[in-house]
Image 1 (spheres, helix red, strand yellow):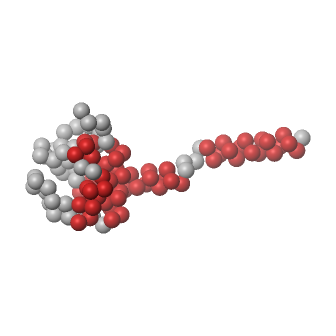
Image 2: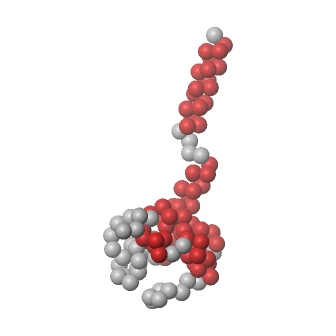
Length: 114
């Protein structure tokens, strides 16, 4: 009888844990959400920031294809240093946390090239 009760308790505990996101997954989801908020506030005026649609500014690449043209680590460093690109873009610099969040968001919306 004790074994049955212990087995039932273990099953309940395991199912409760299975329904909770892993701490790393929850942290990553929060980071992506922070990046989305940054993209909406700072970038959406010119860039298509979601998984579809054209950029409001034709010279600004959609976020969903940005990492096919830029390495994420290089782009992150440029965001921190103050990015310089060939098309007109406002001058800004992100703190490391903001740049990390924006890169996490970019990774979350990428589509295969082609």
